[in-house]
Length: 214
Ligand SMILES: Nc1nc2c(ncn2[C@@H]2O[C@H](COP(=O)(O)OP(=O)(O)O)[C@@H](O)[C@H]2O)c(=O)[nH]1
Ligand SMILES: Nc1ncnc2c1ncn2[C@@H]1O[C@H](COP(=O)(O)OP(=O)(O)O)[C@@H](O)[C@H]1O
Image (cartoon, rainbow, N blue to C red; front, side, top):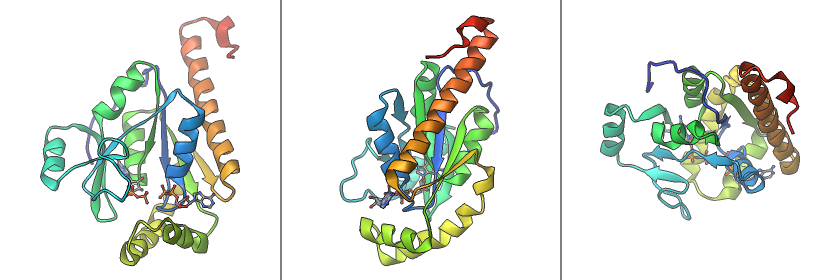
């Protein structure tokens, strides 16, 4: 929705995109991953949805009015943006480009539409889809989280089916049943992504010997 340009793929940092139906556990997994891995930085999105209880402007999201969001769309400030659960969400260029240009890895927690836009713009982003173990568990996680009204939970469950229909477009799928197991899987994906592109960059630089990555 947001861009029409395809960019070259030689930023030194990696982009890891994590999508999931609401309540599958992606925020918890991404937070745990960041605690274990100081080289991963979150991309802070903009959204027109209202902040939840503990959320802070600039930490979980930049909370924007409809007109502020419109202005950013007009100014082509977003790498991607989409309508999700009746609100708008977007990743600003500022949220990721400087970081990956400097060689940091950036993790994006965005919906499937945004994930597919990111793939168009950054050919070597890795796309991970997190699934809950089942519908009943998804519902009870949303209820236990206690942040959304019954009406919002129903909308999110309905949208989950639509989101899951796109799972085959992702590079990896992780089932978040046992949290520690899912975290291990996510760490493995990040590790593999780093090795793949480190190897590619070094091979490109014609330093074959240095392919032994520590
Ligand atoms: N396309 C897009 N989706 C986003 C972005 N930020 C968050 N989302 C998605 O919007 C949906 C709703 O997020 P949120 O309101 O925080 O609810 P939660 O996923 O239940 O915690 C989730 O699928 C997010 O991944 C973004 O910058 N772009
Ligand atoms: N593996 C898991 N088992 C049980 N509960 C989980 C698991 N992963 C996350 N949760 C809980 O499920 C709820 C939704 O998780 P959250 O990370 O907010 O999901 P999302 O960001 O995908 O909407 C939270 O209350 C979280 O503590």
